[in-house]
Image 1 (cartoon, rainbow, N blue to C red):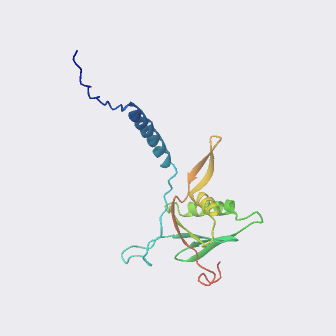
Image 2: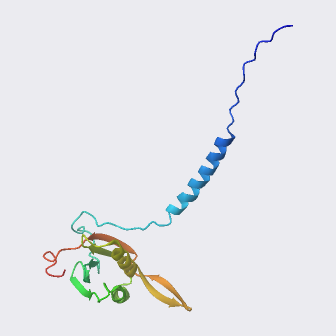
Image 3: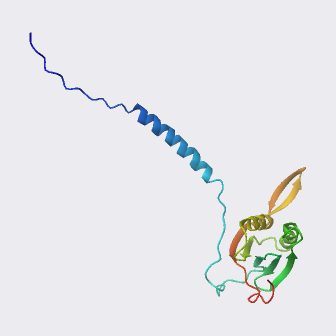
Length: 169
């Protein structure tokens, strides 16, 4: 009887498990990347230049709102303070600020820009509530409350201190 040589074993590589893992991982990454786009907020930072260009005509209103611990100061950059909205015992008065800005928007309907000037220790919640008060005005249409646009183009900067603002802070 002849003796057979042992055959060399052929190795098969099973990729099924790896492919299943990649399909699940790809689906997970696609689903989570779509949700990260929903919470994006457009905010403009003030430019580094201190003045307007010589050929540009001055705007009729350059609206700035300084946010302090105890008040809002609504001002025109060109002419100075327009209104001071003092805080209530419950905190800053976002509703009064919104009502005043609705009146400003009625006087200057073409203006869409506003700059929020913050103290260094202004908390995030105050910033977001102020942005909502500046950006929208609630309005009732056919029994439903909607958010109509007020000043949607918001820039952020540093508020002047009491010495810089001449006591406005």
